[in-house]
Amino acid sequence: MPIKIAPSILSARFDRLGDQVREAAEAGADMLHIDVMDGHFVPNLTMGPAIVKSIRAVTKVPFDAHLMVTHPQDFVQAFADAGVDDLTVHVESDHDVRATLRKIRDAGIRPGVVLNPATPFEKARPFLRDVDLLLMMTVHPGFSGQAFRADVVPKIREARLYVDQEGLATEIQVDGGIKVDTAPIAAEAGADILVSGSGIFPDRIRENLIAIRHAAEKGRARSKRV
Image (cartoon, rainbow, N blue to C red; front, side, top):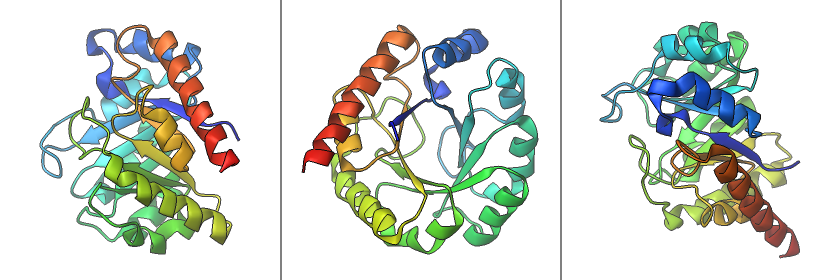
C-alpha cells in the first residue's frame, strides 16, 4: 500500500482553519491529524470536539485524533460524536488501556495506541491485536515544530518487524518533526502513515504535501532494496 500522509492541523492557521483543511484535502491528504491536548498530560491546551465538529462538513477525508490527555476514556464518545474516524490514546495516560480501546471500538471508530519517545515498544505489544494504529512519537508531545528524534528510529524498526512477523494489520504511524529530510528516514524504518504539521502548514500546502510524499516513497523504496 502507498504510504499515507496525515497533515496535522495544529500547525494550520486557525483564522482560516476551514480553508486550510479543504486545501490539504484537495492536495491529496490521506487523513487529517487532530492533536488534542488537555494542559495536564502535556503543557499545551488545544482543540476539543467542537472544533472537530465545525470542520467535519468541510471534507470527507478521515479525521485521525490523537488524545494527549490524562483520562482519554472520558473523551471517547464526544470525539466519536464530533466525527473522528480514528482515536489514538497514550499507554502513559492514567487509564485502563484495554478498556479504553474497547470503548473506542464500541463507539464505531478505529482505536490506536501511542508511545512517547522514551517509552519502549514492549509497552504497546500487549495491545497490538486490539488496535488499528500504533502511533510512534518522534518528539515529546505538546508543541508543534520540534526536531525529529533519530533515537526513536530503532523502535520504529522494532515495531515494523513485530507487526510483520505476527501478521498484524496494525498500521504504524510516525509523528514529530516529519519534513522532507526526515520523511524518508521514518518511511525506510517502516512507517505506514506520516504525520506532519509545520512541514505542511500553513503555506504552500499542496507543494509541501507532495514533496513529503515523494521523499517518503523514496525512503520506502530503499527499505525494499535492503
